[in-house]
Image 1 (cartoon, helix red, strand yellow):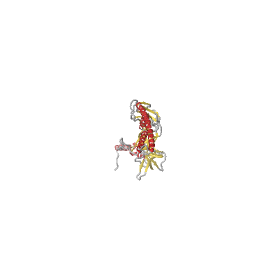
Image 2 (cartoon, one colour):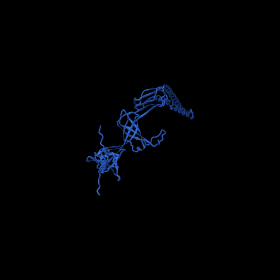
Image 3 (cartoon, one colour):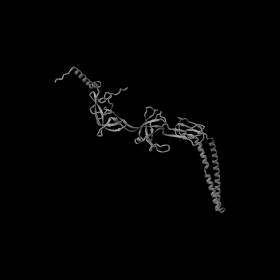
Image 4 (cartoon, one colour):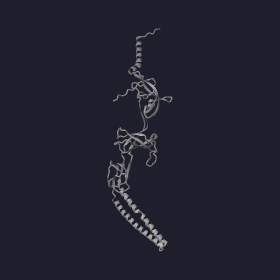
Length: 387
């Protein structure tokens, strides 16, 4: 039986066919990249080139002087004069302050007279005792005195000798003289005065001055337990501070404490954030660096040069345990995925070293090759214009 198509049925069928074609074809006309991995936005990629890879530990610390001395006195005399101010450069032995020792000076004079008188008196007594003993020996030899008399003369000589040798008055003088000398408070080292706590008229107690060598600076920092095994003396350090802006300063790890930081009572601090103190020596000099500044440190624990590196996520692990990267090769007017075997090496938090016979400069390595297949067409992200 022959099927008869009415005009109405033909029109309806045409409309349905048009809608089907529009559904499948229109998106491709509007977006030529539809169905291509990456779409119109394109995939991120890295252009392969030889570079260096640095693995580092980042910490913060405080800038200190390599040599610092607190200057204080044990004398309770009031401060008579102060000769320096904060910021003054001093040499070792420079007078910083003097204490009022008017009463001490009198004591020194009295002790000096007492020592001199004692020495003169005991010297005469010794000479007399010596003469008496010598005379007794002659008398004993002539039989004029007894053995007991001779022994008594000898005992008297020994007592006179002991009195003469007793330098207690001289020691008292020396002690007072030393205190008088210490009343002139002097710089123990060459450096810069960074603190003055001495006030004229007040007793000179506690720390009166701080003198620090500002030309040789170190940084004290804490290394967390997780990283301390990677930090060694001699490792290079890059230092930045707010005071020096973007300038990178060279430094080196000098030492790491063998024990975790301790409390004021000397007990090891027990917590989940145990730290070990490290000392870093600044090699670069910069007048903008000041004692007490906060510093940001990057300690290099591993470094390789002239190697290929890619983003960590660009490397895929194969079921057999090998590694691969996905590159985009030019194919006509577009790009096609190609898989290259690689061997991985040193890695950081963001990048990883790769090597392989097929690697060369200029390869476009796809940064995140998720769900891509070899031979698949891809669209790459257009680089932003350089301003």
